[in-house]
Image (spheres, rainbow, N blue to C red):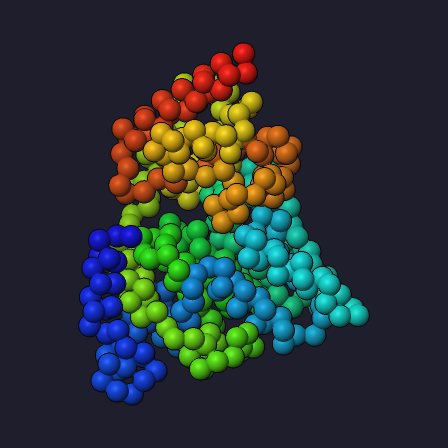
Length: 365
């Protein structure tokens, strides 16, 4: 968390710790803090305050958008991609099994670099398509997807579109996404806010079925007492990190990595990517093994998607890009932040070299 977010969280927790739905003085103080945060978030995205729904994060936001919309629709088609986050793909799997006339889910495949073609997504839209769901940037490769183009095409056709912008927030201009989409998901911890809080932007006029009926908070779109301190910290973190300034460090790391380990390949390196993410593979080294070795050396990196860590299955994103299971398992993802500098990149490359040498020696190679 950023210092600004931590300070805001502490102040709001201390001074406005009441239930914002209560009418006593403590509740009114919490309501003011919640309203202030909502106004800040709405202003950042260029929407009215009523369009902002606070959630526990990207996974819940995605599910509210997908299930809350599709639950109200007659069976038809859904268009998405093979590289979406599991919080999109798993609900879509369920829709394929619903009713006597199962829903038709079309998943568009990316190219070898990890980018989905906008034309392919638009071409899959038919008269019975009820929703299109596409991410703005991939959570593993960092490759930027044509979400804005797809959303604009959906608006022309009158088809509801959901954009998972969790990885794009703070790294891309998200206003064009919000302008064209019906539902846009975000998460605070990607921008230096607290974990466990996020948001969903809903276009005016789009109604959602309430998935978890309760107290009617968030205009009956997400019941449950709001986490006012975390929401306020989310608002405080917006726009504070310049991720574009981080991309030279990511590029420097990849340059040094390929100089020291020539067989290392940068996955998605030929595509436009968000500036802080590097996904690479080193043939002959399994990602989980490298991850554990790096962990012992003090580096926190990921093998595949962090939300799916601990699973031995190869990344569905890399498999969709045409990699073999062995290639996919050799992937490592590194995310840089404002706290890092070239010395961190050099130290990581040096440790990767040591890990490679150590594992080769253990195999007798």
